[in-house]
Length: 386
Image 1 (tube, rainbow, N blue to C red):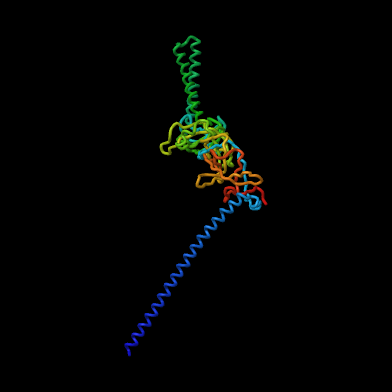
Image 2: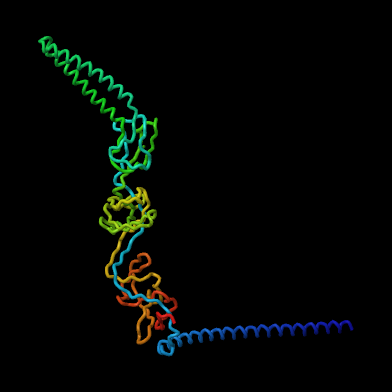
């Protein structure tokens, strides 16, 4: 009896397992069928969408009247005209003065007794700037003056005796030579005394005054005068532009600290050597003086390295690319309708936001400058707001 029950349970378990396996296979088969059907429908949908797009474009191109003005895309256009096109390279330079003078004592270093100028003061040529110690020179003058008075007295006495035929001519000449010798010494001493007064050698501004009473003046560049009547801009140009920059090259100089004022200028000096460290050469250009300009001021220097006349230039943003290359969209009048068309172009230099066009566009072409995104060949456009 027990054996029969075991056999029955075994058969029941086998039947249950067979049923579960069959159900799982059916579910997997149904899932795969649905996935395949979904993929097929997606492919059909993509093909239908592509066919619809093609047909819509063909209908618009062939039946613009049926498309209606209300479907025309709003754009902005610019009629192209030839003009001069210039390309610049942007560099950084600085303002310098052609006239800078470092004041030094004429008679050698000396102790400062008085300072008559402060930094930033305007000075004129010949103006007294410093007073140096002159005690020694003054004492020497006093001594020589005493000697001169004595020498003159001896000479007068000797001359008086000579007039009375007393004495010799040698004694008279010796007394006269003594007077002349002391006079020369006194003249030199007075000149030395004048060296204690330090004067400005040129007019300008006391740009640096690094000296105080009691210090020794003449041990270094302590007093500097800058004349801003003649200024220049100096900048370093990369070696790669050596053949494009020469004397007379046009520049545009902008001074950020002077309300961004722009100064047109020309290169006046070109360096003859290449800096081995930076691989650059220097250029200079004269600029007009002004109250807002200062030596060592930073300058933005635009150097013209390319120029073309009667050239078409377009905004860089209007340039697009396709499988054929670079192109722009232009507006063409076709009957009563305005239609967008592609124009393949060959471009040249870029200057700021403007791009030189070598070929592909003509004067009078109407370039679409706004609203060109998403436009296609032959699409109806308008410049009027509906």
